[in-house]
Length: 95
Image (cartoon, rainbow, N blue to C red; front, side, top):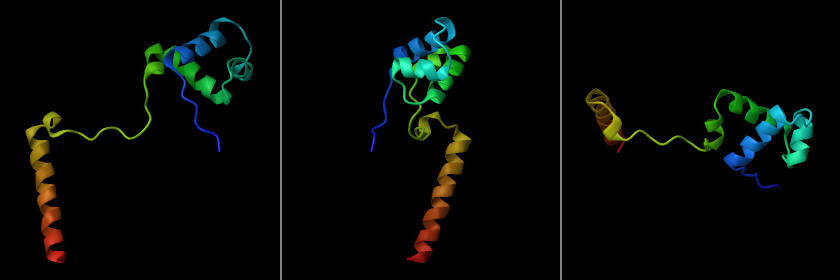
């Protein structure tokens, strides 16, 4: 089983620029030139580069972090705590 490859933001920018400016051919030939296993990955990087090159430096893997109570408004905190109390009451009835 092959391990997923992690590419740096600079590498992604270089690949996108090579496709857009160096006229190396299509997505497949650029992918082969840089050793990227999937041409659709190059296509995705080019789209991100055209929209905002800084997006290529972000790592969007995994789940987003849970919202901390410091960033919640008071109303959101009250609703969250009410939900917790309701769950605990149901749990107590089951025991």
